[in-house]
Image 1 (cartoon, rainbow, N blue to C red):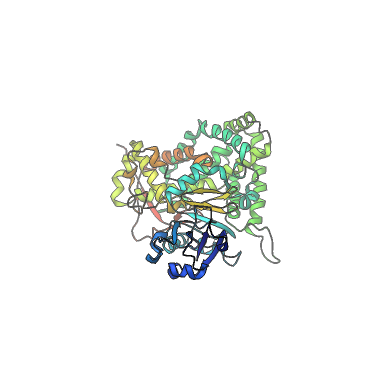
Image 2: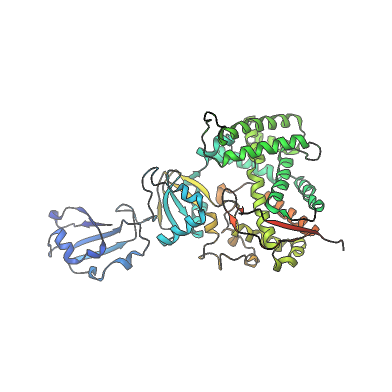
Length: 506
């Protein structure tokens, strides 16, 4: 469908602006135009042709040769799907009707297939569809996402409030403006000045020395270790001396997590158990009580630093402090770290990488390249979400107010326009380690709302990896399915087993 706008400054009988819809541009010719508008050979007609379809094909290639410039008419081709005066293109795709056109089920069923099929259909790595019953622009272009997150963040807000605020309460994920900036300042200072976290990571990382020499499910093992690290770090929990309390808290964080990945409805059907979301809300209340008690009884330096940093930003509400501790101690953080550690270990456990296992223990830069390539190829979270509060333009497209932006981290990290051989694990691509190269990674977000704990997370991964491979030689038994699942957190589809053989002292 094409919109033709006819503008004549000389002929009042042509109207000042005439909008005519054509079913196909191929039917247009100079004679067709004369038929529709009337034969006015004595008048110059200025015609603006604006794409109104979702076709991704370049506009110029679709204009038939019969629409050449003539003495009677001048054709101006504008690559735009928006209204007459907007020169930005509308994102290809269709948002359809509420509910009936929603693509949420298709996305959740197989997000990789969903993305790739739409890329191919629209011949574009950016498209729109209705998702979570909201008109949504999906971004799989690395360059466009970089522009949107780095330069257009002020026009968006984080897109999780309607789904997660009930589970987490007020925290930095759901705030904007000056309040968000104050929270970022306080939390950044706190997370950047945790001197004792390395001791905690090393202490729990040394558990690898006591692992029986039998195959273990790698993801479950890392999830257990990272959970112990995070709860010890952020809650002051000692798993060796508080085993019963630890088991209770881990159980609550698991129940809380199930609410995060469930539909946000709190109900209980007769003769049936309560919904996962309702159970998660109950777990949240219990976890907040645990946090309150531990804050009052514990001398944890993390509690003290967080309280002091919040106070310096004039944030004195204990409820806000506790909600952030709930965020830090929830299963979200250890699952993300366990995801990266699992993917990294499975790559280093391949037969051609066995020698590299020892090298990464003594070569920090080499380990950095392996971590970056792991985060690129296997991002812990498939996508992120924003809500557009003020319209903006980026990458030649128009982003309307009220739309959501779903940035497909997995797809942007495999964008062939940015990465050579994007589906191959190539740590050497990061050997120069330039900031420009790193700016193409979005697992921790980007711009002013990037993950505050990125440095801490990477340090935990590095320390854990160094301890593991300095103590053990890791191998992957044959005949296992190593393919990934991507939701809610990326990890192997199956319980992949790995074997730890302790290294002999040299």
